Image (tube, rainbow over the protein chains, first blue to last red):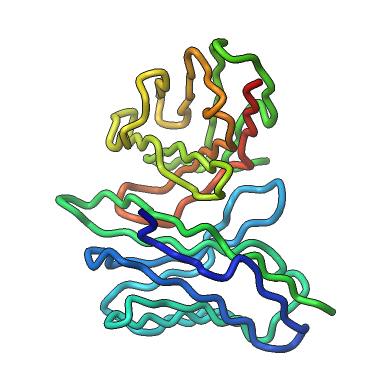
Length: 115
Length: 113
């Protein structure tokens, strides 16, 4: 049962253009969402997060949008750079019965930014 | 100086063997985790410890036994290895239980033959 879905296994974008990575979730108890980036042979690194009380969070070239009614979030990278080429994981968490964050990850989307 | 370090990075072993993966973090974090990334690429939480205390045990078989001798270390011991245990195991840490911003190690690729 995939509670966090990243339906696009891969995405290819030209340098300087916008990259849009999408994520859907099914669990309405999720209230905190994160994006992680992963290079080959490395562990995932935290990129940006958003709480369900917001619909947008921006950090430099990275913006995450949350549409709670559609249970959908997206990560926008503008402008895209070759160094952004990596696997991007969407993750979600809900505070069920406490303050422990148990992240549920999607399968990831491989972003390739072409020079 | 690696923040979250795991050893070994690669491990190839036979079915039925017992193996351990070690994890150390030098970030001063209170919370540590083990995640498993299987062949389908999902990252799934296995265990979470906060200040050496088990917080999350995500219905992992008893063959998997985490041990946290202190809050900077979380080791994973696996008994009677099975083919399905082949995966990449990631250790992670966070400043507290109250954040989803985790710092991951590089992963340990376990192959069971």
